[in-house]
Length: 364
Image (cartoon, rainbow, N blue to C red; front, top):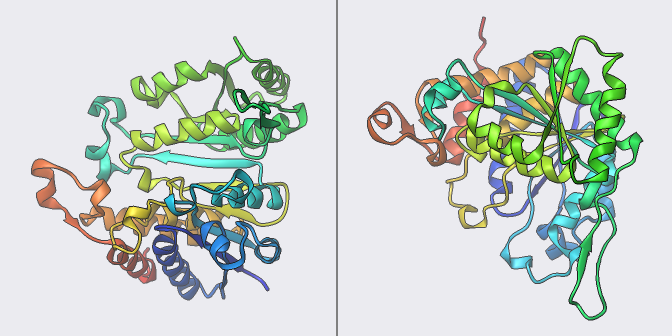
């Protein structure tokens, strides 16, 4: 079925925020007559409770048959005692591998209305901040050989990459940089790691055929410092699975809250996987306190990358900006002091409804 979206709400606040992203997508569908349809599927802890495994074969099959997948978050203390392959997170890793999505795009943007929520000095983000982190998603330490010695006194996780894996990720990164401001920084630990040296060799070999993009390299520890010392120097950052996981969370806090950052995971073909970068926050589940904007903005990426419908993506992004401009804030992005007088703190459902209402209004 055309424009079929699989919803995997997951655990904790996942169902709360996915419900609001669904409202946004329905509003886009109504406004532009897209005919979107949805199927909801168990994944993670919910799937363990329902069928005894974190990624049921039926869930993976239905996701593969869809045009895109929108994910909440998985995991929580309830399942912490389970062994590795049976943990909720194993379902997410299995879904990424099963869909063949190897390039994770994580945009970190400071909305002008949220500049006061940024923890950095105002001059460091003055004029706006817009960074795209392109993270390799199906290789590296998260998927390498791992284990423990028979006596339990040693453990290992192996960082392993092939040139093919690196090249296909960097092709996405170079193209993203070409369409943005033309700067690509490859982040690694090439002074220590052999796998990082392969990343550098591969990037350097690709650069000559892409003269429109300025290529640079940076060690990951320096990058972590530069993100808080001079974040505007970055346009696109490309890096490995583990480094990308850590750096994108840091970039999220530079923008003000992890509750604002969306992501898109893409492969060469098949459905893309879209999700907020935050976790399941089980302490907030069902309390109408979670910020749904990262998931709603992930729905915009879904429209842009998987359905190829840019007007819908722009409508969602404009609606989010409008809600923020009107002073609506979830608790995690609310200001303190004098600025708070210009804002109104709202819950998950009210923020979602406000965005959907603004999507439905025709704008010039």
